[in-house]
Length: 215
Image 1 (cartoon, rainbow, N blue to C red):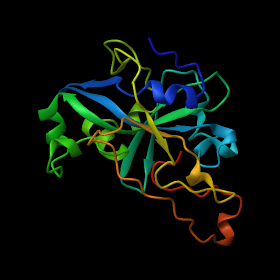
Image 2: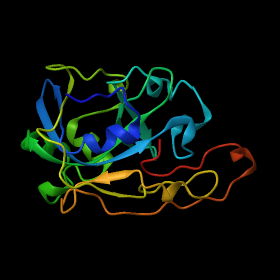
Image 3: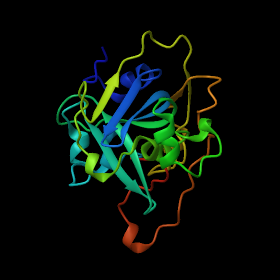
């Protein structure tokens, strides 16, 4: 059983190989997680919660064992597992995985995917394949419930680490944090893309610069 009350950097590699199932009236889709990213709240300029508690980030402050689902680029949803102790923002972005059950339903939701390997390869694709959206923000991971997380049968024998995808932030080095974890050799792992610092406008002062996957 996964202990999600630990900080994100400890939980993230343990999620590799875990199965996430999401159910609705159309059926159920299960994804085996192959790639994740850790985000550490106030200690992490790449995190949505770096500046503290807001209506958007409230879910990230606990309790652990819920989904933090956010909207990005005005078109995509991304999902995270909330972890850590209550009152301290911590979450793990679900970045890539293999659809192992409910493939036909996932295909119907991801009609643009040319291959099954692309159904959940990337955080937005995974959320779409699973049928996750804004209404799922704060959903508790519960056996037999809307969303369920089942621990892997064994801890992954080999885990690769590296910088997170598309992340930038104050200090200019958030993209170098080796807080992305993945299973080597898995075709469902997304391609690495470094973050690009955007030029700040006066109204941007004091904001953390983030890109795809940052939260």
